[in-house]
Image 1 (spheres, rainbow, N blue to C red):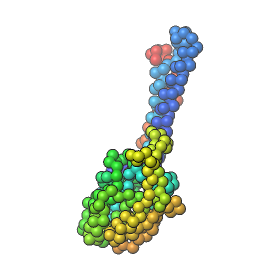
Image 2: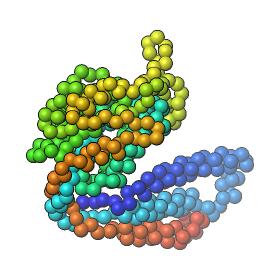
Image 3: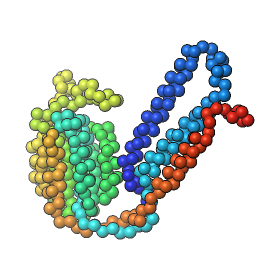
Image 4: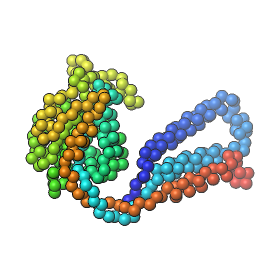
Length: 338
């Protein structure tokens, strides 16, 4: 089993892409600049002794050196043993609405980002509890099966956006049903569902689904993302900039408002609690306090243990590549002519 102790360092791979893009631009700029100096053959004579092959090879050495250093910083670890690890906790499924209305900015920076930040903060507080993620629009999908791997949960959470699902809409009932299918029912007394949405429900089964969950001993809580006055739904370009707002068939700007009544009814039917988020608080902590009142059962899971660091190998490779870069000159080798 491979894992990274400091997984956040992997985001530094974005810098590698930036370096590659910068080099492509530099090569283009240099080629264009040289053409302005005069005849191509004359320029080649002036560059006698320079090796384009060596320059490119040294550049690749540096790029791979950076890649291996980043991996070393993330500290890959390999688990060599599988053991049953027992802990006490609750099972929690969180369903996140990914419909376009979650991009409304009545809650800053927007409803979806506020929800993701709240869940990330929650993951920092969990210990022994199992968590799973469901994303939904007009359909619901399991984004992360129930697990105690909070690092994986953060990674999956960071990747979700309104483009994660192709079908728009808000089918809360399907989200509840998908959460229910993710649980094992050996013991239903320590399980809860949290639905995070603006409440613009487009189905008629949400209440029935919540009642069904309650009958199985699973509480359904709702967290309302949005304000009563609502806001327009932004349309973004490829760079993520707001270019316009969604309009109805008559050309009027659509205003998305928090539907508290629906969310209250769902929470009441599911035996849970409804909390409304706002700009000063996400509200998720209040629901977690409610969930922590549940009786925590002993959960036994088979997990890899005895993880051993493997950063040393990647660091050694990086040092070798750096040494080669320093040893290889950019000028041609007269003997081999490259």
